Amino acid sequence: MKILLVDDDPDMLAVTSFALRQAGLLVVEAVSYDTALAVFREEQPDLAILDINIPGGNGFELCQALRRESKLPILMLTVRNEEADLVRALELSADDYLSKPYSPRTLIARVKALLRRTGSAIEDRSSAGAYRLDPAALELRVGEVVHRLTPLESRLLQLLIANAGHPVTTERLLKHVWGQRAGGDRQLLKQLVHRLRHKLGETSAPGGGIETVANVGYRLKV
Image 1 (cartoon, rainbow, N blue to C red):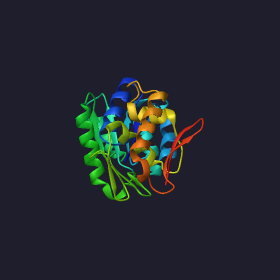
Image 2: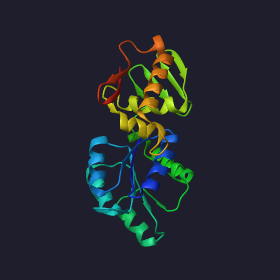
Image 3: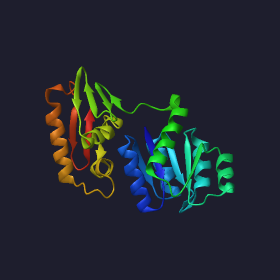
Image 4: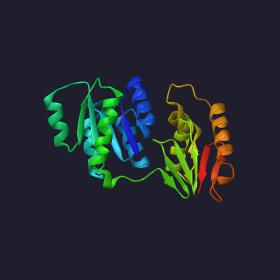
């Protein structure tokens, strides 16, 4: 599942993104109205989490814009616990509402509940070709062979599988695997890819595997 998270608070964005990724969800981020629309159109997420206070507009206007283009589930965030905000969000066809401050566990529970309610419209992004990833169990099935994964390996494969056949930039992989402030760097990513290639070994799908894309990042061939 791919989540669009929109928040102009860098600390809140980093904490929330990392919590969602730890829960096995793909996250794409935006910090303003304009960037959120651009990311939405490029990434086609399964669910959007929108802060009300964002530069270039507000979460209500962004909710309206997304609704004109998609029926994806929308969860609104605000620092104000006001009935007027709740009513306006629901009138704009938002699907749920959560007031700050909130715990990551509460947010994840609300997101999962919202995804369950709209499960029929959600694309499966955990498989590609012969690869079948179970992020919760930390397992990758390649054909009939099952590999146990570390959390870092699982998050790396999660993003590569979701974008199978297309290159994923080093910067995006670093953010997804280690989080925005968790200290990952290019050398650590290179070592992680090397270990994962070694682990998969001869069980990689025919013609498949993790391919280095010069000056860009990595691609999963299927």
